[in-house]
Image (cartoon, rainbow, N blue to C red; front, side, top):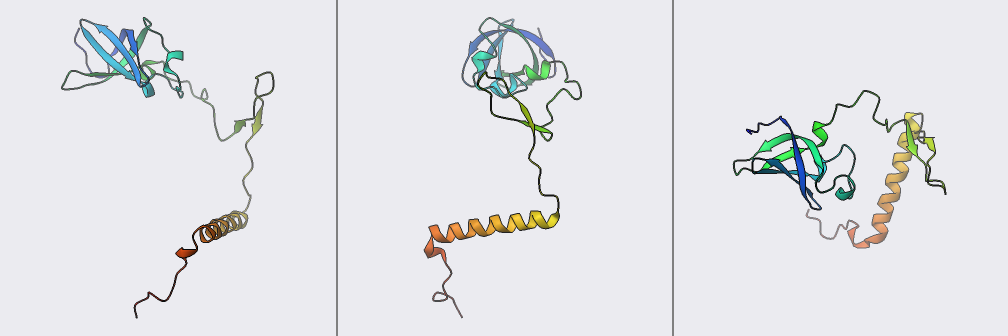
Length: 148
């Protein structure tokens, strides 16, 4: 089977590492799905997403001059429907309840006026600057070493 970049192929998972999944494509060819290309969401433990001997659909991302084949499972998935993704600007999760469920709460409101934002920025900036002065008293400017 001749592979081309952009082609959707099926393969069998033959190996799992902490950085990705090795897949047998048949005809003696194998490729790698990097951990960042396994799912649309963050993957902490790849073994929770795929198992050895799973048959997966993938998109061919690259075929190197050395014969290495880069694949993507997430790019072979059906396109997301509009509105399906979580809009982060609207709500954020609250800490889980004792039973493990979550309650969604509105995101904290930012200051309404420009003056309030500038005031908060100046206060934060002054606090950080005074912390730096306190931690490193030698950093204060001195006129002794100035050239005239």
